[in-house]
Length: 260
Image (cartoon, rainbow, N blue to C red; front, side, top):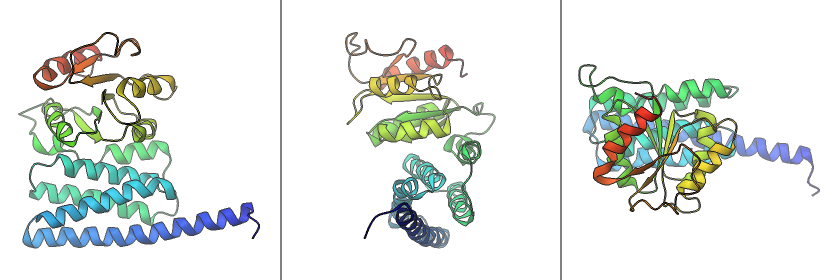
């Protein structure tokens, strides 16, 4: 059969419909899991199943014409990974994520870029639920944290959230390029050592694009500061040291970029 534009359009439409059907099934199963958690508690198998659905939707949403579903699912995956323990607030938050996915699957047309930013950045985060106004000033500042190590992401996320900032943890540096373009974070902190693209290269890529060139960026390292290793960093991009030095270094960066 000769491949034509009409054939491609037909195949694309079929793939989108198949994704929509699968995503709708996952959405229903996520609601079923939330009902089970409400009845019998957050057993590991239930939470793992929710994570599995979020992960699948994150991976497949972009490929089949539903980038907003992918972004919401990514936020849910990050939220669950950063969770300390399940609570009534967690139940409500995860239900909000799930409802947002369902709403987007029901829409006849996908939102534009501005609405994507509004919807995704309006989703729950731990900082807005964990701290009361008397404990810490909640700021509408979002930091995109890029590190392949989930354990490090969890530790650093808690430190950043303790300062009143929202955190979105991502483990794939290539995925960050698309997310930064769509979500316009207030700052990007990226590990230096990653597969495929190191931290310096990621920051250089973000600074090379007009849409993201003004986003403050910092690179994170567990090594001793090496002038040669970071000589290619764009001017004004600081280096943060992980471990015991992170809190002090992060405080300086917050002041440098006027995020406080």
